[in-house]
Structure formats: structure tokens, C-alpha cells
Image 1 (cartoon, rainbow, N blue to C red):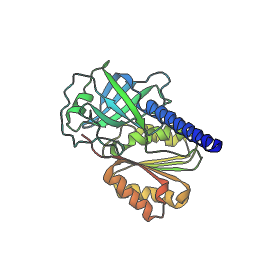
Image 2 (cartoon, helix red, strand yellow):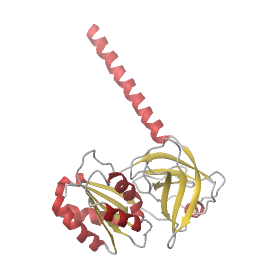
Image 3 (cartoon, rainbow, N blue to C red):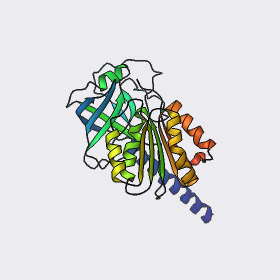
Image 4 (tube, rainbow, N blue to C red):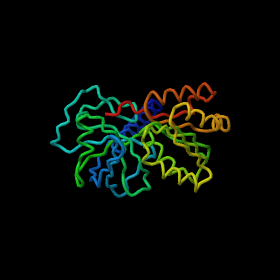
Length: 268
């Protein structure tokens, strides 16, 4: 009887502990931060680079995405089927005023960068035209590009604005491991000079900006042969491009467990 009571107490203690842990995770991921817009750069075509003030002691994983909520009072009515994300997230209940967007900067930088297309949706029009000093809310930091704490190589592919997810990973890992990156740019050249300069200064980074998926595949073929399943493969960008590169790698014998992806399912 005493033994059964002890077991019950232990089980209840485990359940309570798990509940506390789960609550802590939810509180950590779901906490909101109000950020100020520093400036918005209008780049090529419909591309914008949004500079947000970074709160003190705020950290995130390189390659993470977050929910960005616009100020109250802005009209963002649009179709509930529209999804703009670097991850496989269903649209939230307040999707008219919020979107999941990838953070293009690392925690070591002094500001938060968001790189995005303005494809014409009300949300994106409002986001990319916020005046300096406007407030947005950032919450629910998350990442699908989890990386191991080893010194093995990263072989990376980005298409279009998918470079936003890969850039901070390159910046954080440049002194830790060998890095190979092919960017199918599709006209998104905002970080090209920076990455070219890094490749010149660091022998462990190989970088190219490509003009076609086949060119990116050719460029990464040498890395696949060199590293095989000893490397981690990080792919980010438009879903069709990421899916095609995933199939290419698997056909080359890369274990799907070695492939981490972040699919941008829409651009509006």
C-alpha cells in the first residue's frame, strides 16, 4: 500500500513538472515584444528591408521566424487563405494583422532585420509603408532550421528571400565550421556583396549567387560528394525550389534526416 502511494506521488510530481516545463516553453515562445521601426529600405522591385529596434537581452536562433503584428487601427482585411511564412504554420486567428516572417539578422547584431516582398496584400502594403517610430509586436519565435552543436559542415541553399533565413546562420557559424552556400537570387541581391566579402575573408566559406536551380545544383554537387551525410543541409526559400533541391540531395544519397528546410509558401 505504501509502495503504491509512493508511486502515485512520483507520477503526480512528474505530471506537475511537465506542466511547469510546458508552461515555461509557452511563456518563452509566446511572449510579445513591442518593437520600434527604425527605417524601411525600398530595394529592387517590390522588395523591402525593414529595420527594427532590438530590445535589450533579446535572443533568437539564427534562421528563426516570428509572428509580426501590425499596430492597432490598421485595416488589413484579406483572404484567409493567404499565407506568407518561412515555416509550416497555419494562419492564426488574427491573421489579418499578423504574419510569420523570417528574421534576417542574428542575435549578435544591433537590430532586427526583416526582408520581404510586397506582393500587394493589405498586410504587406501596410507593413512596408510604416513610418519610422511606428510600433509592431514580435512574438512566437521559432525555427525549422535547427542545427547541431558540432563542427561539421553546413551546405546551404536559398532561393529568393530565403536568403533571410540563411544569412544569420552564415554570420554565426563563419568561424566554427566549413560553409557552402548557393543563393538562387531571382533578383534579391541585398546581401550579395556582404556574402562575397565574407567568402574572400574566410577560406571556410564558399559562396555563389546563381541564376537557375540547375546552376545551384551543379555548384552544390562538389560539396555533396565531399561531405556526403557528414554535413547538415539547410534549405530555405520558395517551396518549389526547396522541394526540388531536397529531391536532388536525396537522389544523391543524402539522408533526409540531414536535410533541414524552411519553405516560404507565399510572397504577398
